[in-house]
Image 1 (cartoon, helix red, strand yellow):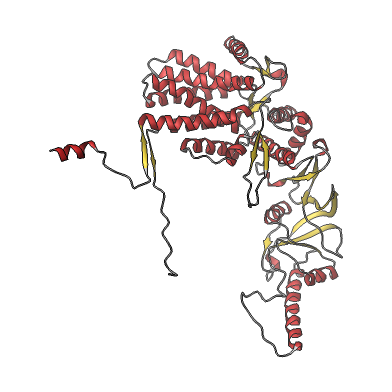
Image 2 (image 1 turned 180 degrees about the vertical axis):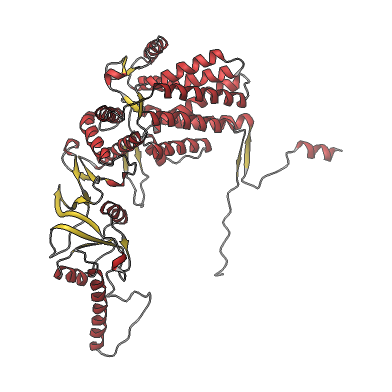
Length: 542
């Protein structure tokens, strides 16, 4: 009897040594703690007055040892830090999806998700079941998106007004970036680049090149495509009406390429015969390339001295060692194929452009392709004092280009400065008043989480958020739905007059992603950890 009682009181081991689980309230507390920590980490970077973070790689022997990163981009910060908490990883993933889908709003989506989970702690303390909370949140999300859609405007039929909207969206996006001091200049630069794509969302046609020196205001938009390579020796440095063959093939077959191969000869004359045979083999390959009727040859791999000499004798411009990303982008822009064999010249599509020339930016020589087949191709050349400034400027420009290209595809716009969030929060609060039962408490918590976004924006600027948000809430309740926060003067103002606009698609994606992520975390009632897999000793050589 005593043995049976002892067995009943002792827990039965279910998992292997090293494994384990957290149940119910402990699991939820662990989940919420990770989410809140991630939200608190990035929320100080939110808004036009947000602060930057320094990310420093550990000192060691790796390629990134001691590397420094200064950024306020939420997706960049979260992708670089190593998180161990499972819920924190969920928030990192939604910021990455937001970055891939829209390009901006990566901090907003993480902060909104973490604020929703912060509200959940109070709801669970009131003994409200997670499924009840989820039902309320779904109703709140639908109402918020309905109101957001009702105020969205589409000016794509009026090209001049649409360009003005794109400029305002670019300025709003750049307001929280390192380029905010020159946002008018860079906004025009980005809008010009995106409009060249003629409605396409593929940004392959827009290349960004960074060069140290001068300052950021010396950055410019270059028509055509720039390749960060040099033209070979004794070859023309300028060529019009170029017919370009793009290849990924070895041009160094003057060496025996079989690993561990040996060639034994009994006289020096036979070594000369071998070298001559290899040269003839390379000459045949060059002749096959020339049969394509090209006057420019660009290779992904190295071009050795002998084939380079043969190309120079025929007046063909040869460019070697173009990196793989550069070659793929170049093939797309020039409208040509990347080839590895040269036996069927009639089936190969050559790239074409009006002019190829060598230009100098700073102290570096680059090759410029003008009048390319894909006429919308262009290059943004960024200048800056330090590598950290250039890297952050590139991230900022990339975010703006992504948002603008998505806005061209989905042209509806809404108001920024916290106006859209407050409008959605007001509508959700009204829904909570009309809803009976415990769901109304969950719906009201969703409205409070939405109001936290403008509150954090005001706090980050050093203003009195309590007064500003109460004034903004009163303005929206009285029907002034276009009012938001003016962070330059520390007051509320009409966003239409200030020109603070944001992409409708961006706001929609933020609300959807944050609500879905918070709902998924709220469903968790058990965290099961697998045991560490033990590495078995290799006994093959013992």
